[in-house]
Image (cartoon, rainbow, N blue to C red; front, side, top):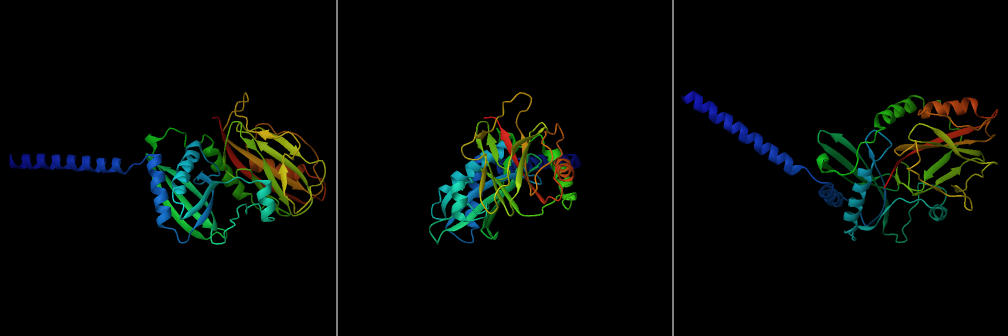
Length: 328
């Protein structure tokens, strides 16, 4: 009887311990709002210098160039929290590349902020997130103009507390594509420097109806072709210059005075999701102009254009960016 009672006591103790552990686990789980509050607090505590003027870039899924509606909403919550601390964060704004900003900052598209107060430090905030078990772990970092670390933080969100999608359907394909691009990086020609950016930055989220622009700067005069890979894999030519584009000058596509672009998530048979922009610059121009149906392979498309679509003795450079589109 003593042995039986001892076993019973041990069993009860084990149940109590398990219950306490589960309770502790649940208490540690956070909603997006609670996580963003914690993230802002840790970023502030870890600041190595301030005050800062922060440009907020994308929150990407780890190991991919893509974002999600969850990530976009989370950044909104984090921005709101950081703005409450005006002493350390003079300005916190989402990235928005504009012609006026670039022209006043010189040649580099990556430099699109400039505080008039010399004591205020220009910085960027970016991050990644990963899924593990029933949580999403989010890492953010604040870096200076030269890439130096100013602060970093990590927090987590309980998946069951989410109301927005966090795992894009194309995740597996994009990870495979990133591997192929890495394996073929020496075959993708970059004979001269080409800088490309989107009006919201690489990897950003666009909603149905949002304006969409591409910014390009070339080291050499060249013809430009812009390809757009839709979520269904179809690749279409959305722009091609009819003459060489001047070098060392900021160009916006579509140009001023022409029909402007906006994101369309309601086109029948296409839908929304992770899409891509490919900019090819050729000093001699292109041989043909056509659409590539259903390839979904960025590597094959780029190599095919380089090998078959260029005029003889042409120097060429290719750049590509990703964006995620979603309906409101």
